[in-house]
Length: 260
Ligand SMILES: [Zn+2]
Image (cartoon, rainbow, N blue to C red; front, side, top):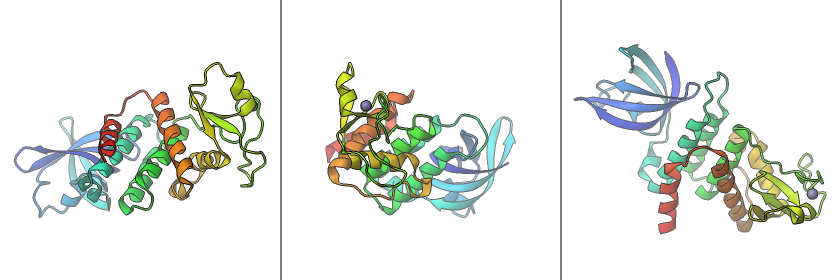
């Protein structure tokens, strides 16, 4: 069996062996043993390092997967030496694990994860930006695409994303429970104001881009710092409301970033 996968955990196993947990492109996660993988002479040694993306050649023996060979495609190993980036990378892979449905076909969450890791490694954008955009796109992938172009209650247009122009004068909110924008008039009628975050057109556009831009370009936009802050708040709140796990890696990341 040949699979493309990212190493998300490594452990020692036996004298010279190691055991790796692989986040695969199209088969969820699996654990595989690599006998002799700790020997530096081993041709596939680098592929067994944490956060490397490789093509793995596997055989099955007595219910275990054994790695017979591997071809390195891209190494994100350097992220594992940067504590906060590693925590964030772990959060991405933890979310990605939950998105696997068992169906064949293109795994957009996996591709998003790779693009996020590249951005993080190359420091193309600040980690907070990468995290927020990842979370919003992840929501779309798992079926909670935010409604950003018009009010979810009355349908009034709030931004015209199709032409990139602006047709309505701001004054909207984003409701994290409904995962959608709501106009000022309708927001006044909502029973709870708890989930409302003021949403400028810049914020709605940032949400729109994160949710729908091509995955390989999804992180490529800049916005002002207030918008970035609100984007981060919305993204994390909505993700935590719509996934069934409490990601341990997110807590680690937040603990690390609070210390600074
Ligand atoms: Zn409305």
